[in-house]
Image (cartoon, rainbow, N blue to C red; front, top):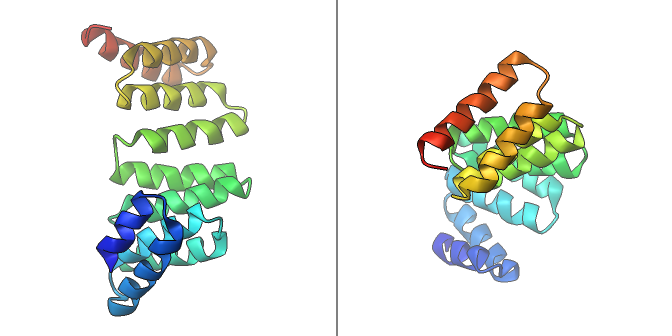
Length: 168
């Protein structure tokens, strides 16, 4: 049931995915992956309370999966709680280092909080992970100009130097 649900979810067939995931969870309620994917499905269906509940169940079973943290971040973002969203996105990032989608979500939350340098940093990472090095370099250069703390400027310089070493 889990694989059928996963296939339906990836095919954006949410009505078919839901009963498959529910059956998978019914058969193995202690599988954190099943709860994480069900949380993701609920979040994509705008069933935010159900998404939160399933994400928390997944985390209670295992803290090794980025998906439930990303779901909780997306829910917090939709609720306008961008600082909380960023905290969840950071937890997800620790488990999924090169996730471009996650970088984009963080950039949007930093933008909502009017933190342009942080937004540029995560947009740069988004483009870098999508292998669009020219746009990554552009974002990092803009971020360098917008950064007001030396520690932030150093991060931007490091990213720019890395891209230049890679031939951009």
